[in-house]
Length: 263
Image (cartoon, rainbow, N blue to C red; front, top):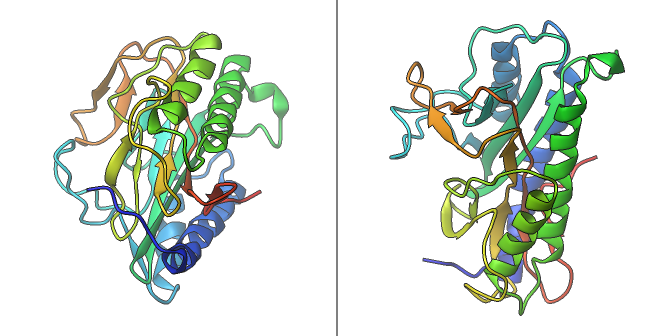
């Protein structure tokens, strides 16, 4: 069921979005060559445990599309992993492409956001693959375009079509098995927000609709599989790398509000 929130609900959701943004900023600073994925997970655990009213959306989360509960605090997807990466004992290497996806509940409301980063690029730009940077730039711009189309009176398909059109034009194939979603008291709700669709079709956007928009792509394929070792991590079938970017937004009478915005 698609739920429309009141203006007060939107205000009440802002702390969750701001906290997700704060954690991701800290994670961004922590990501360096040699950083262990479990250290990032522990940082998120500590920040959530020290925040009054905060609760992980991932610990004990066991949806039908995965095997067992997630049991960690953040999704960390490296290189050919693009979504739902389960943290494990791995030290990041120069040039790794890391996607970080985080959802946290604060005072009963959820925020959800993601970004991708090339490990070590801040210290040594030469480690970055041009193909990786192009993917990151593409999903960031696709997200911006999707958010721009998140306006009352438009249709859900306008968001999806504009995201898909941009990424297709950049030369990427698009998978629609996983995409954006409604969000509120739970992390995943209606409506689904695919990363490709038909303009002018679907649910009519109304003020008070809260959605997470999340473009993601793999470099040379749109085919994916779930890693059997952990039952969660989504990988490209051809081993090519992936990138992912996401924000939680509120539809209003005017411009959409990015609830998870950070620099």
